[in-house]
Length: 92
Ligand code: FES
Image (cartoon, rainbow, N blue to C red; front, side, top):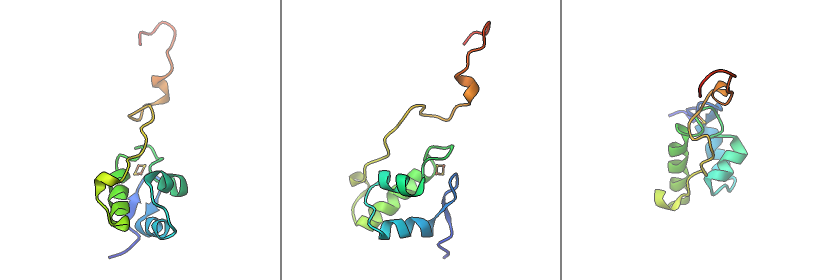
């Protein structure tokens, strides 16, 4: 099976890129995020987060419960910029 499978489709991060990062000594999801930008796309890691967490647990030979999830930062769901702009005369 190819290592060019997209793991993070928002940031075009492949399985091969994740494996290389894990082989370089990365041991947390936050490090993966900072190193590869995985989880920083429009879906904010909702798609790739569980896959990356699973890959990290497998690499560290531990259970998923031992892998800390990404810190949640608002907004918790993607929103358009217009959601933050209140036009005069419009109700929010
Ligand atoms: S799939 Fe990774 S941020 Fe969306």
